[in-house]
Image 1: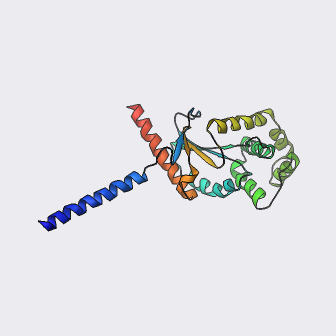
Image 2: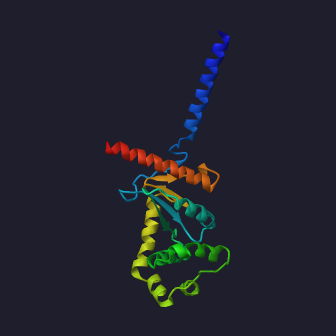
Image 3: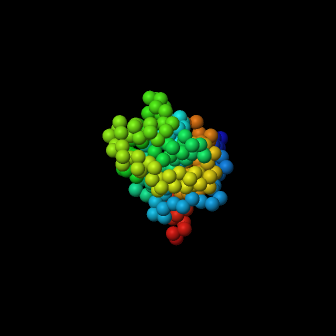
Length: 216
């Protein structure tokens, strides 16, 4: 009889530990993420991840390779969008224009990492449009076309819109990640970039489940 009781007790203990681990594994609002009061506009057919960042941010530079590697393996229903922010700093606003100009010219995938390298490793001081244009030319871009793009109304208007999105999402620092326009990840809830991306994956799963429930 005693052996049976010990056996049953051990089963209950294992079940309790498993239940506790499962609860600990679940993300909690207020701890791991916050809910954006007025969600950002996102695609209906995709689960969009937004990274708010700046080329001028050293943490964004360190995060960039991990995010790129993660993004390369995204399932077909998930997409990544990057939004450069300036926080109303003129030097960062110039870097935002650089990002949008590279994107518009189809050069972002080739030169995105190179911008981080120029700023944080080669110590290129992008303190003027002239320096940025010279850098772009040194990387194979047509100087006149790039200058026209960098200074175009469409590119310049993207900078305040990006900052407006950041303000609407409650972004206080970068890098910051938002899932489905409404879940803002708490960077302090984890100790590594890998852990942060694991939490993103969990929120993606949460959004999928929410959408399935709504579709029923």
